Length: 555
Ligand code: FAD
Picture 1: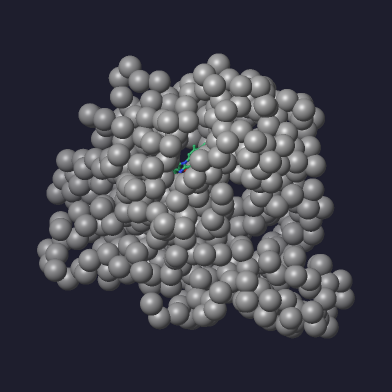
Picture 2: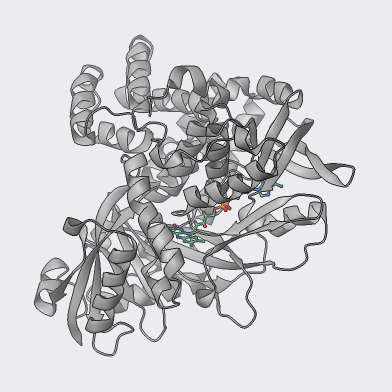
């Protein structure tokens, strides 16, 4: 693909132009409106825009504020779905792993996943080997990346603190780790680079109907307080856990409905759980497994899977969730003994699954489904972060077929379209080394450059250039690069408040909570200055983020 001209196209995600762009969108006839700025909506916006459709995406909070910032952050085939004989799902998402890695190598990192095997565990040596063999085959894994089995001694040499009781061996296989919110924003930026318009804090509150067909939406701008009406030939509801709520704005949903299950992750410091590999291990006394994933200086542990009927806009991590996960980890690593005090951060998300009578949360299929209402609203739910591209292709195919001139819209090309920030023209390690060399002039070290590249990809260059320009006005180098990063977020990623920046654009609330605490007031000051916010708005942003800091710990 041609490299994306970031400067020219991404101005549509410039916070300072948001109001003006909303006005102009109100005067445009769109081919497609997408409701929901999680990974599903972002993927659809990208697929449709690259096929030549005029696309508008509307997100009620911030981009990725729903489930798409609360997952296990793995681009994976879902080994456990083999147990449920979901071969089709495993094949589709398994193959997608390599595709997405190719499209965004800075955001998708291969990891060796280690799976210990115990006598009387849920997986024996033979069944593990069989499952991983099928997994590799379905996902068309390259020879050098295929799984291998190891004995108990080798397993302990990888992770010496593992519970040795009844340990009979293990397996090592390849998975990919990502940052779900960054992946979502990167897909959105790519969509915008191909002409889509995307707005955060734009809540769809009603549908407009003409001759029994949905032809537009009424939107409440939660940032500016205005209301807008937008028109489109097609509307897709990709509202994740809120899909049924949005369907209700159209008609009382009939047929299949959503079944929400909650999944919790805990974050502990690496010094409290000194492991070096990502692990997928049995939970004692439960027919479930837990992921234990190292990332920088932290380890995150998840997930739970329980039915959820409470407030979708305020999902709590309870003491019960925490105790369940801590007990699981303390059994896997008996010398470690984590306590509530070890937990420095956490997140909880909702799986928007399709209800199947009589099935427990873990048994529910992760397959996606599409519903089309009498008035033409297309809703898509279920699925996985990993399968976003294929889901998008499937639903945009439907939109193309419904159009008056289906041939006008080409086939999906997203499998070969690198995501925004992935136009490196060299390998990442060399790219990081080059940028590190340049950044020495402004006192920025290799560790910071590594973080910037794995967060913004080639957007790093713009951040370094801005930091360079700020050299005369800001003496402190850390403040200078932070300011440059925030300016980049305002101009290219529609950052409107402290939480957008610290939680979704940079993941600091989860991956580096101490730094989040250290910088949030400075972030508020910089944002207030750059966005000309009054003192009251700045204080509100600070207090909103302080609430997030409290809620990030189990109640
Ligand atoms: P969301 O991300 O929730 O997006 C929907 C958006 O719609 C929200 O941002 C919401 O604010 C918006 N919205 C709602 N109503 C309106 C409205 N009226 N107007 C405008 N916008 C609206 N998948 C993987 O592949 N790998 C994993 O490791 C993985 N782990 C997971 C772990 C957990 C605990 C959970 C819960 C899920 C996990 N998944 C994983 C699944 C994956 O995260 C989800 O399938 C995916 O994120 C769903 O994305 P979405 O866009 O459909 O929903």
